[in-house]
Amino acid sequence: MYTVCTPHHTYTNTQGLLHPADVHLAIQHGVDGIIVSNHGGRQVDGAVTALDVLPHVRNAVENNQRQIPILVDGGIRRGTDVFKCLALGASAVLLGRPLLYALALDGQAGVHRALDLLHKELANTMAMMGVPRLCDIRKDSLWGLEQQGVLCIAG
Image (cartoon, rainbow, N blue to C red; front, side, top):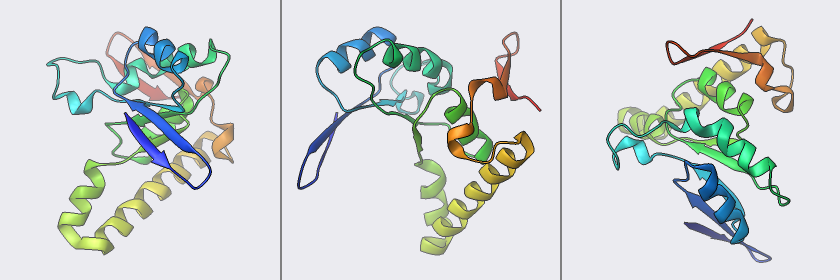
């Protein structure tokens, strides 16, 4: 659980929720946001990925009267990953490892370069999909190859 305080409000986000029942409980207990994460898969061998459960978490949030943001933490390496998460219902994504690697490689300039690349990849993906704005990204931009466990961008 993470708490962010501002002069006018305290926001509480719960990280690590992967099951819709846990999402319902968290919302009932007043959280302000959900962070979908398997903690890098380090906690449970063979844990599901955040991307796999994201549609179920989105459905759980939509089935509650109080709508809250859904953030995805884990597995974001490219702009196409951001596009997939947004299409599956994420409000935003969190970046960890890619920015830490960039920081280790080239300090602040590396982080700026990594964020610039991610932004350009996302913009390129959106352009190829005919999606002019982030709010226009929809689930129907994706189609799944469930047999292979691969989520592809339709186009």
